Structure formats: C-alpha cells, structure tokens
Image (cartoon, rainbow, N blue to C red; front, side, top):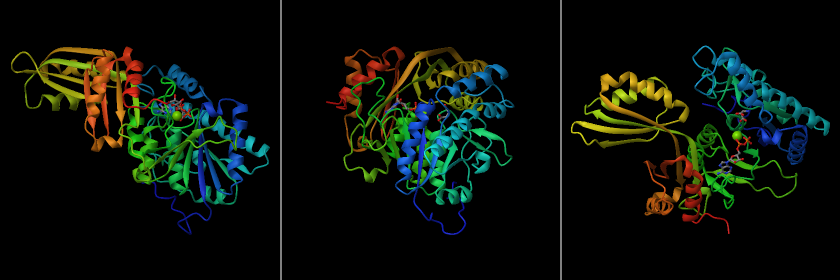
Length: 433
Ligand code: ADP
Ligand code: ASP
Ligand code: MG
C-alpha cells in the first residue's frame, strides 16, 4: 500500500520535500494560525517543497461530533450507532479541517508566500470505505507534488479522505497525524514534522508527571507501544505507517517562535539510537473495563465461543487471564476491553450464558492500564520485578498482567493511575534531575 504517488517521470522528487503537521491547539485561533504561518515561512526559506497538514481548530471536532450525535442519536462507539449513519457522521465531523486549510493558506499569502489549500477530493487522498475509522489507500500525488515543486506551499486537511466512490471518510480521532505521515510517504518527503503543544515525546505524559523528560530519539517500535498503550501524542496508526514506510517523524513544539531552538523528538529506526534505555517510557490508559466470568464450564470450545461472539459483536478484547475455579470442572476468565465496549461485552456474554455455562458475570469500569515500555527489556532481566516492587510499595494491587518483548502492562484500580505512573517513573530512573 501507499506506493509513492505513482509519480509520472522520475520516481524521486526533483526537490526535497517536507511535511509539517499542526494539531488542534496549535491552530486554536487566528493568532496561533499566524504563528504557524511564520513557522512554515521560516521552513520555506530553506528551499524545500512543503506540504502542511492541519487539524481542526481546538474543540471544533468535539463540537461537530456533538452535532452529529444530536442529529443521529447517541452511539456507544466513537461514531453513531449502527451502520448507515457513519458516512454522514464523517461529512459533519470532517468539516473543521477545511476551515483551517483556508485560514492557514490566507495567513501564508499575507506573508507574501505562494500557498493554496487542497481538499481531499482535489488531491485525491484515498481511503477505504470504513467510515469513522478509515484506512489510507494508495493515492496519486502527481499534481500535488508538481505544485509543491513549483514552490507553492500545499495546505491539506488532516483526519479525512475520500473513497473510490467519492464519499468523505475520517480516520478516527487524532487521525491528522496519520494523514501527515501518509502524505510524507506518498510524496517521498525527507521527514514528517508533527508540531504540537508539547516540545517532544516525553518519558511519560508531562501533564501528569512534572519530572518527565523529553526523549531525543525513540524507536518506531517503542513509539508504537507508547501510542497504542495510551500516549496520545501520536495516533497509533501514524506510527504504524511511519514504521512500515520508514518515514522519519519528528515531534516538536508549535509554541516556539521560528528560529528558537526546537529539537523535539525523532521517531526513527532502532539502529539510529545509540543509547538504548531499558525502559524508555510509561504510558497509561483509563479507557479500560474489566470483565470477570466466574465458573465457566470446562469445555474445549468455551474460549472459542466466548471470544468468537465478542469479536462478532465488534468488542476489542485486550488482556485475557484464565485460572482454575474453586469448583471442579469450572474455570474463571478475566478479560479487558475499551470502557465504552463494556456494556456490549456484558450483553454479548449474557446472551451466551446458557450455551457456554457461566455462573457469574462481573463488570468493573474503574480500572486503568499502566505500561512500561523499552527495547532494552529484550535483553534485561528484572524489569518486571522492579515494576511489581514499586507498585507493592505504594500498596497498589495488580488485577491483570500482559507482556510483550518490549512492554509490561498491568491493570490497576483507576484511582491509583497517577500514583502508579509517578512511582514507576522514579523506580526506572526516569525522573528529570
Ligand atoms: P495535537 O492536538 O497537536 O494532535 P494531542 O493532544 O493529540 O495534540 O497530543 C499532545 C498531547 O499528548 C500532549 O499535550 C500531552 O498531554 C499528551 N501526551 C501523552 N503522553 C505523552 C508523552 N509521552 N509525551 C508527550 N506528550 C504526551
Ligand atoms: N480534528 C481531529 C480530532 O480532533 C483530528 C486530529 O486533530 O488529529 O480528532
Ligand atoms: Mg493529536
């Protein structure tokens, strides 16, 4: 997927190109858009072809989601309930970005630069037809790339695309990051710079741990785990795409005046990182629910039945723990899923209760997942012990554990999330001096 824009003529661009992306807070009002224009202008002076991807102004997408829900009924999921609504939901919620493209193009022209906005149908930026969570498909950047190479700054809307049937789609919340990386891959850009309201990727969310440190570099693998385990600084899909297409991504601040130091964090291949940390970061997610099934009848197909039905219902199951029950011939199963899926998960199992044979179903929604991530973990023993000891010292009970080669996640009572993140940050020596 995403072959470089089926460029006619030479495969490589005639000039080097850069993609810059600005998130919602960075374009939150016209003064901020003016500052973004100055940042873009300063980059333009370096002589590279520029494509700029923008989000909707802060709060705008939330407002549009509210309007769509009001008109189409409340849905349990991100979009609206039921198929047959999501295409029009996308029409509504994609509107915010169009405004920002025009405002930024105007601000750039005011500075004397050549700039134009490109809506998705004009590029055309193609996606599949999975409304509200569309995936980027192959698209042709011949015209866009040509215009950029002629020195016209392209300003494109993030978060959205169009299907082959020319219907508007959106890529899921936070999707402008993915738009930017996809454009960078298709344009064969040197790098994709993601400007946001923090000056890089930190060891953990700097809003909850004041002693978090900015990382100079982080590997794609670690960033992928950080994002998928809750660090919303980059949308998970954008990191997947950057990893697959080897697009170097830099995360940096849009609140710095052009010319001031702004090194940010480079998301890059592991072999470009000299100093490998055992633990690079800590992520947390409060969007979790824990479902406990007590006394599940022992049968070879019990798990296949339970998790098969949950998959059919569209419940995204994460951690799974299975233990022997006290009664012979029975076992207990605990699993987690996103909090918003909890009622659906419980209903689905309730409807299978007779068939599968489940004594009790319990749902807990006040849980959180805290994860430690680091590529150094692959070759280091004792990482889990440090985690368990640090949590035990704070009296925090672990309700489930999941591991991969480069991460350990634990499920805990949500009330202790910040305490756990801070304790782990200290235990792994990540606190800033
Ligand atoms: P944008 O609107 O620019 O896309 P987001 O709000 O999506 O910005 O992402 C930036 C936010 O991500 C920061 O304000 C910060 O609170 C949060 N964040 C969470 N984890 C991290 C982390 N490890 N490093 C940096 N920021 C993080
Ligand atoms: N505006 C969209 C959102 O708020 C996309 C983005 O900002 O990345 O989710
Ligand atoms: Mg974002």
